[in-house]
Image 1 (tube, rainbow, N blue to C red):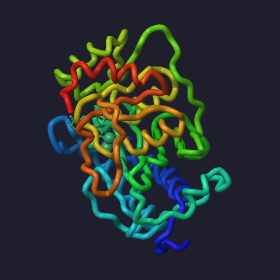
Image 2 (cartoon, rainbow, N blue to C red):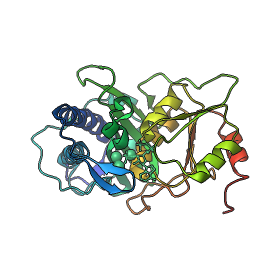
Image 3 (tube, rainbow, N blue to C red):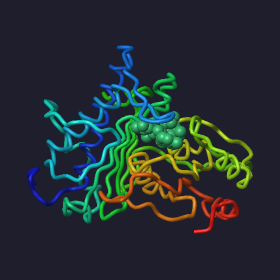
Image 4 (spheres, rainbow, N blue to C red):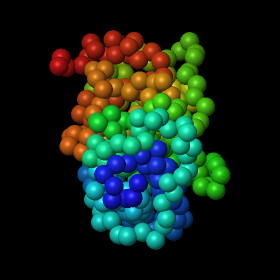
Amino acid sequence: MSNNSDKVNLGSILSVAIDASQKAGTVIRQVWKSGKLGVEWKGVNDPMTEADVQAQKLIFGLLYKAFGKDLPMVGEEDTDVPETEEIPNLNLLDQLKIPEEYKNVDKKEVCVFVDPLDATREFVDGNLPAVMTLIGISYRGEAIAGVMFQPFVGNDDDSNGTTIYGMLGMGTNVPVKARDEKDFVIATTRSHATEFLEKATQAVKADRVVKVGGAGYKCLLVLRGEIDAYFFPIPGTKKWDTCGPEAIIKSAGGSFTDAHGRSIRYTIDTPKPNTDGLIVTLKGHDDILAKISSVLPKL
Ligand SMILES: Nc1ncnc2c1ncn2[C@@H]1O[C@H](COP(=O)(O)OS(=O)(=O)O)[C@@H](OP(=O)(O)O)[C@H]1O
Ligand SMILES: [Mg+2]
Ligand SMILES: [Mg+2]
Ligand SMILES: [Mg+2]
């Protein structure tokens, strides 16, 4: 398939997304080490740094180089896309593990959602483990595959970070374990809390509330069984925060819905804000939805 083909292999896109997230991680580490973050404030409590911008330019450049500039793509930051000298790697995954239905699909029915640096606030504050590059791949509006890359954690192969990826029908590259304790522990935002979030947190009767940054990072805590749910039933996250993490959670058998229990759609035209929030679990999803329904506005 040439990059100007109107057909694409989602396994190849996931391979380039993994490669691009690791290369973006190198850029993020370089900006951190330089000490020149170049922080700009896009809105209240909504920072953007030089690392966000450079990482997105590299990721877009690699995906366009591999699949053509007509690949539908949405990124958090508003940047140009220079040609990249880097070579995209289309062969990181075993094609035998890619579901046949994803190997030859119409490019115009695909959309790639890029959060070059999730948890920018944490990056600015120096809480580095929560920092992740998130890339999600949707097909016909459904989150199908995704990668989350932690540039400041671990040292897997030669990427000097930790790579977590998944695809529906293929599963994930990391072990997954639902939390199985008597108490009920949720994670929510460290820096974007609202009065309603506090009220909703009381409605679900959590025994413990972990307040950490990063949409991707809180999904990782669910995957590892460190929390029972990522609980964020308020506006604030966007489609680039959730497409990749949702595909990974679902490929691990988990649930990822808005606060009313509805699926989230990911097409190029879908409004970017996740206005009705997020509930993310590996088990016990319906119980949380039942408890929170008492405080949610009626649809
Ligand atoms: N209220 C509000 N305004 C603007 N942006 C918001 C808001 N709530 C959540 N977000 C974005 O969602 C991502 C996760 O936010 P968290 O609060 O969980 O963590 S953190 O802000 O990343 O530390 C994080 O994504 P990044 O922008 O990629 O860091 C936040 O910016
Ligand atoms: Mg941001
Ligand atoms: Mg984000
Ligand atoms: Mg971001």
